[in-house]
Length: 373
Image (cartoon, rainbow, N blue to C red; front, side):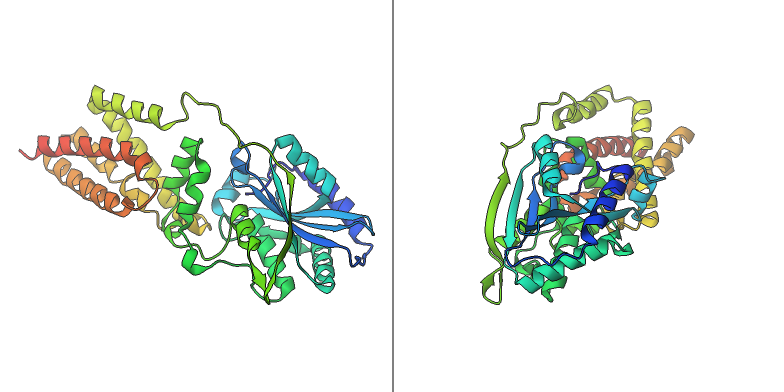
């Protein structure tokens, strides 16, 4: 959703430049325009959701600045731990529109502009607010994947200046967060799989806010405030053909299925033990992440019913050749698997986890029949 390519040096340079420019306390003219920029998706993982920014343009005062809420320092100590925990700091930065344009031109990502229908007073208030926050601690915020990102920060800023939550979501049209996010991972199978199984039940709730750039773009198109359209003009600044991803011989569902078919055909107890160990470790990680992380998306992860730590018990009793407890632990794991299937019936990722379900089910049934005698 946001651009993560800016290094700390780049941030500091931009900040110094911005502070110097914005410290002049410019009074923008009546011809000034405020617009929301919606940037297209890219090939890299960080750019799969697009990006949102605010542009303030005033040709009379030679102002053409883009305000970006999607910047962070990739060199932050313990970066990945902070990201997983949910206390990674993002910040607002500013650059000229030409710099912004050149970056997206280089990445071959589209830019659509929606010019907002705001009074001069509102434009000035927004311009002053954005510049003041750049010079204060308000420029920092704790990133949340759904609740607080570059898009939600733009929405909150615009709503604050207008004075009421005009940009929002129609509850009758709301979809679950998981349904909204899932298609964005097309052509990135393992990312799609990983995000599907690490997210808990929060993403299965209907979205209460707009959190993706394309959602905001579509919302503003027909939105009216006091019977006046909030978007008075739409411009396509950059346009590229839809990205065609080259076929990957490994990053696809078919190779993934082939692995499980091979495992089933080999039908070796030792291989099944390794397989169950991997599932159990993933389950423990999901449980740990749910308690450790401040990301509410990772809490209450029912995927532990498939990636079940009880599988460690199955392995242990197999090694000990304890038929009674192999039977009991296998039955318990099968019950968990059945509950899991019932939960996933209406979830978009049931198909991509089906190889796990089938393989685990086959092995657990083998153990059940073998040890019930």
